[in-house]
Length: 343
Image 1 (tube, rainbow, N blue to C red):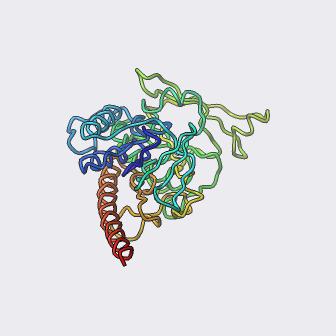
Image 2: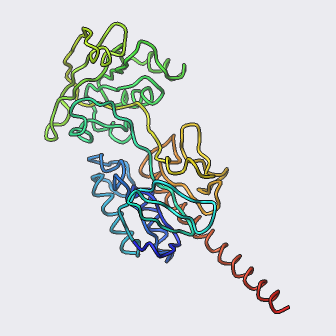
Image 3: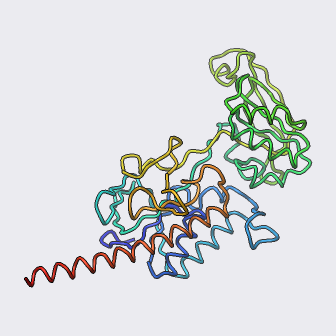
């Protein structure tokens, strides 16, 4: 990473979207710099096995897929560096990015592929078992739980979607919610309530996850209180009820937070959910010319590795086309300036 250089393309994020963008940008001889961020590889590194990515009929490990993508991008000339963007100046060109290290980078074009971080609930052992029976993505990992009893944590649309998808595979799905009233939309709540495989545990929270990386998730400790919010009641010293349950999988459905904090004071438009907004139509362009979005940071709906890879390639192609237009425009301006200077 060269602080004195002006990079044609800086890609912020090294998940599937960022790596796909890096491959395409590098093949276009744009010599992109990829900032890996605080979680190199993104959420896919938390998935032990990926079975729905095109070209891997036997499946592939999430970490292996990311590593292959990085090697592929490096082969074509992409440069990788560790760095977290804390602030961005996008009003002038080249753009300037301030990193948490205190370093600064300049770029003619910027691809934002910072992803979205799934919210965790703070249950004991979740760090150890994430990706080993504990998941934040039913469409990614649900098929591994055929015949299992599983828990879904949450009470919003995300939880209902997770539960309804899991009901295709699991023997039973239990939605664990800390209140006795759902935040989900009426239609999603009704679908879950009416499904014969799905049950609800009201006023209940997940306290501890049982299992190991060798065995996977084997069970859980739940805590409940008649008035809801049982972990808060537990912390305040109130009496709560404990229950041990045997389950083969646990899914967090409490939402995702897009990683867009560094864009909040810029002209890049964000949705109410804080997802990056792209312009209408089939494009990754944003409200700021030269800034492009890719992957989960701009996709609140699909959140799949294959869709992230697709938007990553689109962002690189859009950036390449935009840079070419800028070069032509700059050349014309320069020519006009010379003519005017000559009188």
